[in-house]
Length: 450
Image 1 (spheres, rainbow, N blue to C red):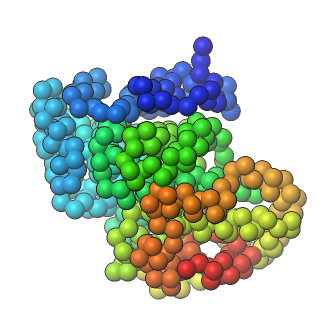
Image 2 (image 1 turned 30 degrees about the vertical axis):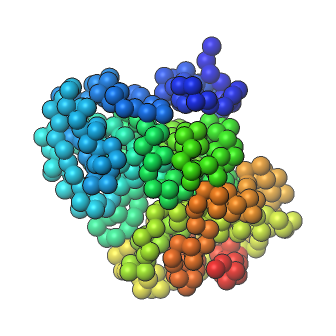
């Protein structure tokens, strides 16, 4: 019998951490939206309490080729990289590629491509930066790769996009490809510095605000929307939230659920063909911080910033949706000269052109106001089950050890306010940031943030 859309049970630690994931990867899971078997571009996803001794078999089964580059940095070399390189030496010629303080930018992409030109495939051992570099390099030249995560710090391991900073300095999500294999050793993730798991948890909790944003865009503008990404992670998200306080203690079961939700989010992105299921206004705020903080950047992780931004966006969403009447939109006010001063001329021009479809003139504002008046009562009810109350979100983030304010991040209030006010200028995704800004209300929300 095919596995249907919902979950009949939750995961257990008796070797069943991938019970739903196995069905999806094998093509046995039926998408409830379409009634068809779902297909995803992965050969193998494994989540286990320990993978010690299984590394060679896992990679051999992928058939990546006889020459492999194992890519890590100094931190992940000690955590898992050297162990993986040694074990893979029994099945392939292995070249160790040690990255020095890597950044996911185009210069690093070119460097990694040059350093690995003579191998058949890449084996990434690390987290966000290393995974994104290996993913994007191999997607550009037609090779394959697999990844051994060393920390449960973000949801991009199994996604089909890579976050790369362009030469201009603009951080973007580039269409890429999925890893052939993703292999989680929970004992390694649980031993990583605790702030990494807190970052991953914050990336997960963003689901609620991203879903509300995406649904708004769908209902108001007719953009594509899919329920499948949320169906597959709904039960596991609840289990993870119940165990948030166990993450700082390194509890294996809590890390298993965190790894499952991060993996399922990536699979959902694969279904949807866009990162929108888990990345809307809240991620734009984090991207703004990464792109434009400069010397003011405190060195925090993307997920940590996303958690704080999710609280901000949840306050905006829940305040506006608490009203029985919709906000009244006016023509969009975005000054390209002001953008150029803050972003630099090249990035500002690129962003201003990208967001042209969502900039409202008087006619467009009037049309959206009419549409809002028609759908507002339904929209309020439709989004209610998607939301997590702000107080609950904040409590969960605190219990996981994640920041909950700009002050916790080490950011000045002035710059965080700037990020919230102007993050919507970065890409053409319509969110509650746009709704509040075009209603001339976003400034009032910003002044309440610390």
